Length: 553
Image (cartoon, rainbow, N blue to C red; front, side, top):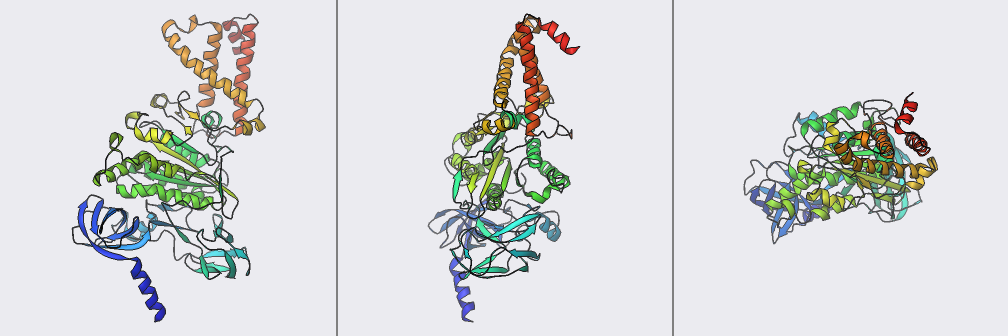
């Protein structure tokens, strides 16, 4: 009885109850004594999930992650005393969640095709048993992040000591089958389970952060060759409607050189998200030959879902990515799109009557984007060596205007810019990445030089040819191609080869959809060799038409 009383007292001290005072869409004000910032709360008789985002005296402002239709002042509000957290452990891979980690497949089986308000199902299955194999023995020293055992969850998943755990001696450890809540080990009186919880707005700790060095190979020639992203790097993919943002995200999900893919559909149209949910389970992982979903976690938060949950979905995705990074794995997080996330913040900010910044976005837009992208990187983990998180964020500027606040704020943070061009997409050039506006601030010359010593020089020459072609196009429109000097005709011809034979790539051709780095270097080298031999013939006195006719023959 004493133990029970103590437990009850502890629970009561962490919770408080109040009542609703005011409702404005997803924002609710409630009288809630002893409330804390970012505490998770249950709102109304339906127990809607919400989070405290502002406190003034005893009045707490809550953003509710579900529709607030039918709520009325006076309904109860209960603070849980805990932060918005996700469950991390076996069972994450191949799962599909909403923005606050509610398992959509489990909800569909239990409640039907639509999410019932107030429904609360755990992120990880409580019934499933996992075969736990210990890596340590009694008496071993265990610190934060130390691997204590493994389970098989499509990959060999390490069970780690929680980051907040105090260092101590392993008092007991069990082998066998357990669910995620059962105790598998005890370290100096501290229980360890297969599952742990972590607040989504707090970055998981690591030993050290390094500068990215190794390219994230995607098999997309325009990316790998001209605008590379390194493992642990950040990229921005802005583009107008129909320019292929989602197609590029799909290609990266399938082909990127990452162990784990976390795909966050943040505020996307329902039909696009349903395509992702239908197509990804059918795709085969080219590395293992198994379904691609076996190394993927999907966060689905469509545009018709509550905006507050859209705001939380980005944090849910990056926290799950950090968990796999702590396993010593390379993770790619694809966010589609951060514009919808920013729009959710703008709506919440407006309802809070905060002072708006440019185009109505909140003044803290840049800092929130920074918090998100800064959690990417190459890290030395607490106990599993090195792991990386690469973040690729799609941005959907209205009308394709790259000067709008979300694009500009993102570009100040990320180091890679893949600018999508609607004109290229309409002319059937995919990936529709504009080679004149895109850039990468990462250097991978040393890595490429190991594969092909001439590659850095070839890449530089190809870039110069494309830039020179853009200048010559204006002249060609005025005087025509035949009026150009032979040297400029060669530039136009070589640049066309680069555009049509190298940069353009078909996602539906099994041979063209993915190109290995070695093949990319050889293809570019062949084009440069063609250009140089043609140029040598011109310098020896031959005419452009003569050389071209010989080569065609």
